[in-house]
Image (cartoon, rainbow, N blue to C red; front, side):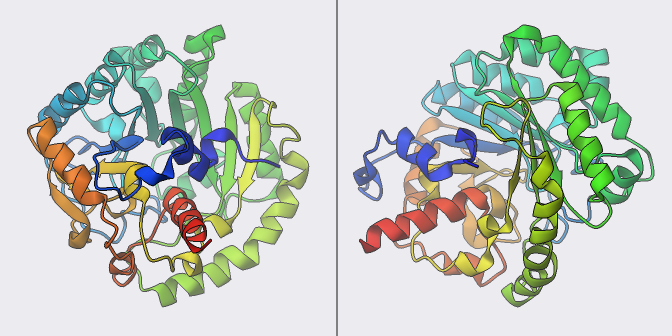
Length: 371
């Protein structure tokens, strides 16, 4: 089954560059396809959940208020960047008091927004602040999206998977249902559910229940996958994790999911599985990184990073500089990031790894360069 267009990462980059790959490393300023902004939560704690597989589990997690500078940059960019993604290497964006201001500024200039959240605050913020009503009002296309990391089909397994003392499951489901109801027949923003599989949440009955729930909610997609090992670990440990949790489990999960997955890309919800080959640490052997043309990241610590998966001071080599006050300052950092001599091994030697997007893009780029 073909992946949805929004998950074909190299094609997305190629289309963004209008098929002209000669723009890569030509020493000219090329704005990235998207800016990812990791808002510093509520400035007190990074997240209200404690997921055991969170990529922020082993890294430094400072929260530095930099929102006013970032809002100014989004305004100054004035639509030059097509997408602004609000998520976090370790922070929950909906906890941030400036969140709606960022979405409004994004749409003011005709860019699209992407939101990655645990979903716990969707319903409450709609009731108290009209958050979902405002998101649906601002959305202009199905390219605007809201992605919820649910990772369970029952409340009990959700509480265990997320390492919680309070049951949030049905509050999240209520928030998703409210979002779907508010957007109505317009059909946007797109609403996606992500489900990371583990031993607690992967019985056949629970997977079937999750699929039935996604259909009842009328979301746009449901993606199953296996969580990465934690960032910051020696690659020997990551390979052991790959052997135990990815290679040995993917065939089991594929068999369980086979009767539940969509048969057509047009199905709604589109239900699909992304295998661990898209996060394979043994594929991270390329010599150049062109991910800078796809994305640059403002970290929750107020620094600009080469990519979203290294946006923590645990990986100081990936810090490009402090979030600047001016567009010219950001442009200098973007140019710095377009560096043909940057060696990805700098990342890999300290346990930093590529996400799915960067792995696919860089692997394909190396293949093209070898032709």
